[in-house]
Amino acid sequence: MVNSKNYDSYSNLWFTEEEGHNLKLDYRIKNIIFDDYSSFQHIVVADSYDFGKMLILDDAIQTTTADGFIYNEMISHVPICSHPNPEKVLIIGGGDCGAVREIAKYPSIKKIDMVEIDEMVVMVSKEYLKEIAGDKIDKRINFIFADGVNYAKECKEQYDIIIVDSSDPVGPAVELFSQNFYENISKILKNDGIFACQSESPVFYSEIMKKIFKTLQDVYNDVKLYTATVPTYPGGLWSFAAASKTNIITDSKKLIGNTRYINESILKSCFCLPEFVVKMLK
Amino acid sequence: MVNSKNYDSYSNLWFTEEEGHNLKLDYRIKNIIFDDYSSFQHIVVADSYDFGKMLILDDAIQTTTADGFIYNEMISHVPICSHPNPEKVLIIGGGDCGAVREIAKYPSIKKIDMVEIDEMVVMVSKEYLKEIAGDKIDKRINFIFADGVNYAKECKEQYDIIIVDSSDPVGPAVELFSQNFYENISKILKNDGIFACQSESPVFYSEIMKKIFKTLQDVYNDVKLYTATVPTYPGGLWSFAAASKTNIITDSKKLIGNTRYINESILKSCFCLPEFVVKMLK
Image (cartoon, rainbow over all chains, first blue to last red; front, side, top):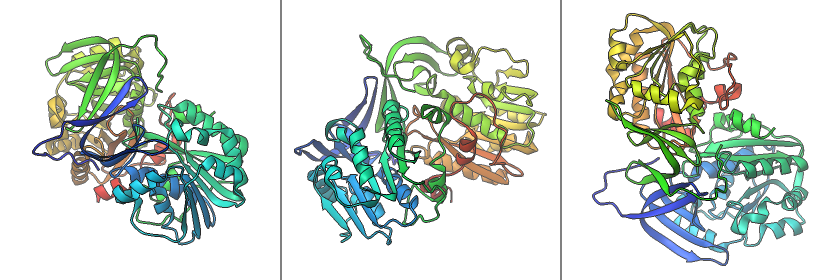
């Protein structure tokens, strides 16, 4: 994944990501590909030596061309495979278009509504991060550039799968972590539907993870946490939550697509949690 | 795990770990507890804000009181549980005494020989890192301060379990990654014995990981890679290798001890590898 070649000359440009007060990660950068402000946030695409191109929103790395596939595969294939027959999908967030690209690999999916607040993130990803966003046009994907919180409140349809692929709960994503939002999402999820979201780091943001889990337990019958290791996320270990009004299938054999992280054994074992995470959820 | 409290005043002391040319991790440090040179390496114990006390050898973080249990549980419980009836254990390296402490939790173990080249690492860990090393005296543990490479060459005994708990293949640990060493280890491992070692990061040091795996495959009948996520190791994802002349048990129910990372489901699921790691090993 990482390819630390012996370059003849290195740039002395570094991008520093601060994780709380006491940890910083410094990535050596070849050059800045894009740097602008949308109505919502500061958007940067930087080309790094070790992790390829990085999408950085308000100084936080969201995804990279080297390891972005891990997050995007885990937030999409797991809910799709946990459902008996998914046809209609809603994604809230996911502006890098990596999750929607994974979901579109399933021929059974008939419609994907993707509600992203910041159109500039989608435009930038499609232009500069084709390794993540892909370059195919898929008529099943319906882009809606709107506030996901309002969309969930006012939506009259129901979905088989709803995925909240948000950034951290600061800036434009704060409301995507509220109880009110989760309740509105529940109303537009079919009875046998699956909800999935990223639920932050069990190491650095365990309080947020626990809050998401407990809030979902108030709304759903079956809530399961699953994890993956994403090298450019602080501490590596990252959690996701899946929830169902009925039950979540964890032994599916339906995985398809040319995946690089998830496979049938990961699809099952991702629900096996380290003991300290098990204890956090009790 | 991480506890970023609002301290009244922060130290401006940082420890920077360089991972290759293009990535640096900076940990804010409260103070330096120990700083000296042994005959083999530079030994530092630093008290960090986010990860507790850190053992740093030649500028590389080896273990911390916040997440050291992950590595130490995985390098010890997995081989112990993969063996039908382990009694006699050899550890080469493991100077922080975390692995030997985990192994000593099993009453069936009658003898543990621990061969560590650098006595000062053991002394420092027992004095300043009691959270990892423990403070019990166990008569089954026999400390041998010697070169593990020579020990393996000249040893006349045979063991049920041999664990190589080494630092990275630079400095004093280089020879612990050589084919010659693996062959000597094989001679002192019983026919139904289990060998285990840390096999580096699949993300940052995949060439070393692949080399260890291939070298073990030349010597053993059954070789399996397993992983864990260790937040203070670069990229989080870390690999270990287990090897047997016969076969490795992966569905053991023998796990004991008050563990914080490993549990019965992790003991089994740790052998489930991400697809990019599966492909690397082919």
